[in-house]
Each structure stands twice: as structure tokens, then as C-alpha cells.
Image (cartoon, rainbow, N blue to C red; front, top):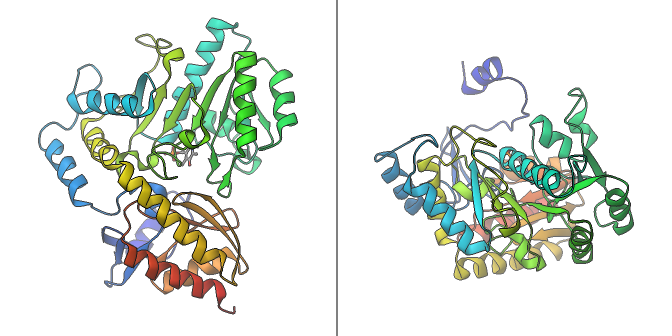
Length: 389
Ligand SMILES: *Cc1c(COP(=O)(O)O)cnc(C)c1O
């Protein structure tokens, strides 16, 4: 059996995979079984922050792997403590809970918000207002938080206590907050799976205003936008806000599974021993990988991310095949004249990996993608966008 046949026979059919087996990768290049080379502008959905098997990252990970791979949270370990310290120092947050995925990071954020509201306002204040078209994960609670019916069908009932306001609609948000016993507002600053849609600054300011007025917990889901992706370490910095809770995952571990929920001063003591936990959370190998990633997301790298973003936007906006480009930093969604499916497929044939977000072509290249590969890939993408069907 080929790899594809074995996979189809034995893996549950939850994924529609592209017809490509990736055998190995180096930096921003991936190679299939025949040795064909692909420039990767998708990075495993914003996970491989520094591309495939980055040497510095691999060295840190390997060192930890051959020193101590797991202890459980019954003991202290250095990488876990050091990563939490680095995240707090870089963000101004106070405490961190480590898990293994974005959904889990959001579960923790929701638990923190519900407990805060119960303690400070009363247990009936349990509603979390999220946004339509959002994406917060696949567990039953984070699915409930996700404001897209298509993900809910077949899995009802979901966790109760979530209502959805329309993104960038201030009066709808106000109404949803006022008409419910609201604990928190949870949102992505750039809706990723929803089609790479940045929130307007005035709408985000309104979220903060309502949160102050109603003593709400603001939860920013930076699972995709975080860790340098949008041109700042976290996207909330560019909106000039200080959230109460920030969840992140995807790029944090550079390819290893790790989620983090960061709590501000206001929620610093919200959890007591026994309130929450994770057997794998804070795994030393994943934390060593994340330390290496966060350590390298400095001002120089972030300036480069923004410069590459401007280059991509300029190149594509001037293309006849492109209607518009949305997003921030190296998280971009391209509204193309041709169908996004056709573009993804044709780019793959021509050796460039891009993915979709709703009906857009989505780009999530490595933060350190070399200029020559970026230019080559964008040229290919432009040609594909401009070609006739
Ligand atoms: C991917 C994503 C998630 C879910 O992360 P998993 O690691 O797949 O659980 C949650 N929120 C946002 C914004 C995401 O992009």
C-alpha cells in the first residue's frame, strides 16, 4: 500500500488532505517522496515559526530531549519556569498555564473567566460573548465558543453559555453584553480560519470600554496571531490594549505541541491547586523549543516580518488576478479572481504550498523565510492568480 492508501484505510476521515506526502523539510523548503521541492508559505498552519527543522531550534530541542523529556506537573522543571518568565516579561502578563494545543489554551481561558465572574459578580454571570465567524477550537466547549454553525452541526448539545456578536458591529456587541449575564468577551484580533479578517480598532476599543463598564474579562485568542505572526510578538500590542487573558499555541513551540494561557495581574490568583491541570502541559521538550522560538522573536526579526508583509501586499495588490489582500504581518488572506481551490492546486503543481481560509488564499510563511524564496514563491503565486483557467 502507498502511504496515501494506508492513511485512507486507517486514519479517521476528519481531514481532507492534499494529494501530497511531505517526506522532509529544511527551512522554508519541503520535499515530497520523489524529491520535488516546494516553497512552503503555510508552515503547517502557522506552526513552524522558523520553518522545518531550524538548526538552532532543533539544537535546543535535542539537548532537552536527551536531558529530561517529561516529569509531570508534580515536579518543577527549568524550561517550564523559564518559558513562563520569558512570556510574562515580554508581554506584561503575570502568570501562565501551559497546555498542549490552542483549544486547551482557550478552555483554560474560559475556566479562568467563569471563575473570576463567579467570584466577583455571581455564578449566574457565566455567559461568554464571542464573535460570529470566529474559530476557537474543536473541543465541545471551544466549538461552542466558535461562532460558526457549520462546525456545530452533528455535535449538539455543546457547552451552554456562549452568545455570538457580529464582528465590527458595535451595537450588536453592546446588545449581546447587556442582554446576558456576561462574564467575558473572547475574540481573535485577526479572525484566521474565518478568512483572515482583522478587527477594526474602534470595535476593539469598544470591547475594552464595555469590559470596564461591566467588569468583564477580555480574552484575546492569539493561537494563530501570536508569537510574531502579525509583526509584533502578540497582536494585542498593535491594538494598544491590555487583555486580561491571552491564549496562544500554534507557532509557540516552533512545531512542537504547546499551548499557553497568560493571565494578567487582575486574574493572577484566579486558580488554586486542583482547579485545572494537564499531564503533558509544560512538557520540558516543548518548553525548550518554545524558549528558543520566543527568544529569537526580537525587534530585528519583527521588523523583517513587517517588511516582508509590505512586500507581499504590494506585489499582490498590484496583480490583475487579485481583488484585495487582508491581514497583518505574515498572516495574509488574498481575495483572488480565480477560485482559491484552483490556485492552491496549481501553486502546488508549480512547487509552492499555500492554503485557504474560507474563500481566500491564505499565506502563513515562516517568520524568517529567506527573501529569495519569498520572491520566487510570490512570483509563482502571482502568475497563477493571473493565468486563465
Ligand atoms: C488553530 C486555532 C485554534 C485551535 O488550535 P488547536 O491547536 O487546533 O486546538 C484556536 N483558536 C484559533 C484562533 C486558531 O487559529
